[in-house]
Image (cartoon, rainbow, N blue to C red):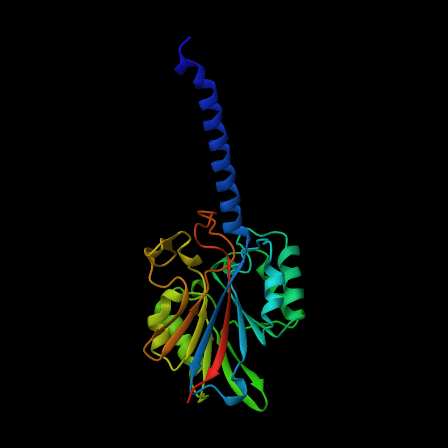
Length: 283
């Protein structure tokens, strides 16, 4: 037998070990991409923010899709928020058991005031009405085409919540509802909670200062130096998928969300995300 023939079993064993190591790495990597939550922190400065709200901490939770995560609530608690905005798709449209999301609501409301707007999955979910009632009984302000205020030391910030776009069916009805919610108010600073970032052109035509949205899942797969790959309503290489962006006088915080798209249930270079926005009064 030749010397080369004797080496084949050893080389085969090495290749098998290498293959198993790479496979294990991929399994762990892909699991953490779905399960381990990160935090993105931003400071938003605007001269119209009342002085009492300087340093006010807003935590955004979006697109949970009834999922479970390794460090979700421990990270939420560590942010010490003054209030919490849930910007839609807390439920997945196929959700039948509410135990997980009701548990989240119990823990969130114990930390800070919670404000909720619907996403497209709530509109299509058979148990949403039951979940909505549970949230209201727990003290969550459900802002389905409603307006409320944040109050601190005698000063106020207006908060508007828009129902998800599926509830309207057209840009005209969506825009008209937002206009009617803004009508007659002259608050110095206004926040809008609306699930869909791709409707930014509608938001820009109002006096809204800061929008919180989700829906895009960060583009689901994020490519280095390029960004998100695909998002609902924006398709390939979407523009509005993550971060705190500013266009004209409007700024928008876009959460990559926590849960997965039902069409492609795997995040890549796009870990689940909580967003913390700290308000700062400008000069």
